[in-house]
Amino acid sequence: MAMIGDDPHMRLGVALLGRLDAQTPDGHQLRLPGRHAQALFALLVLGRRPRSREAIAADLWPDSDGASAGSLRQALWLVRQALLEAGVGLERVLDVDSDTVGIRMEASIDLDVTAFEACLVDTGWGAEAAVELYGGDLLEGLGHECFAAERERLSDRFEDALAVVAEHRLGTGDLVGAHAAAERLLGRDPLREEAHAVLIAVHGLLGTRSQVVRQYRRLQEVLGRELGERPLPETEAIYRQALARTLERSHGRAAAILEPETPPVLVALGR
Image (tube, rainbow, N blue to C red; front, side, top):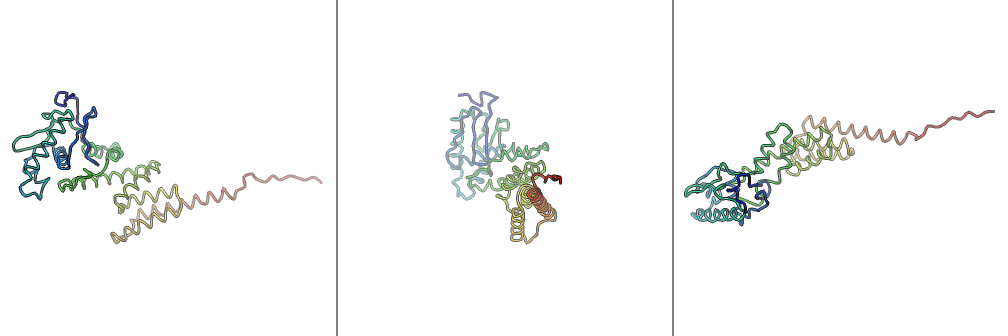
C-alpha cells in the first residue's frame, strides 16, 4: 500500500462539514473509532499548528478531573492507528512530541472547510460553489463544546451564501433554483426576510395570488412574533409587484378565454 509519506503527490481529503470523513485519493478510508478520536483529529486538522497537550485536553474534556491526559493519549493512539491502517505516513501528517500535538504545516490535506471559505472569497460567483460544498453543519454528531463557535460561524456564512444564491438565481431567471435556495435558507432561519422576498417574487412570476399573499403573511407573522417589526419597504414593493403580476396573468388568461378562436365570417346574401 502506498504511503503518503512515500508519495508526495498523494493527499488526504478531509470533510468536516457534516459528519467527519477522511480518505486517501485511492479510496482508503480513515476509520476513527469513537467520538473522542474523531474530535481530536478534527481539532488538529482545523488548527494545524502544534498546541500543548494540556490545551488540547482542556478543549476536548473541559470537565475532566485530571483524567484528560490519559484520554488524550488513548485518542491520539487511535488516530495514529487509523492513519497507519489507511496507508498514511505518520511523519507526513502528525507533529507530535512530549509536550505538543499538531498537524504538520506541510501536510497534504484537502479540507472542505478551507475550500468552502475560499469559494466565498471568489468574486467570480463562488457562492454557488460554496453552497454545493456545504455538506452540513460542522462535525454533525460531535457535541464537543470546543467546536460550537466555529460551527456557528460557518453556519452563518453558509446562510449568507444561500441568500446571495437565491437572489442571483432569481435575477437570472432560474426560478426553480431560486425557490429551492430560499426554502433551504428559511428551513434554517425563518427570520431571513430576503428569502421570503425571493419566494414572494417567484410566486408572483409563476404562482397564484393566494401563494403570494400566503408567503407575505408568513413573513408578517414571523417578524411580528419574533421581532415586533413589519416587513421592510423593499419587501413591500416586491409584494405589490408580485400581486400585480398575478393579476396581469389572470387578465391575460381571461382575454384568451373570451376571445373567439376564429373571427366570424360575414357572408353577403343576394336577393
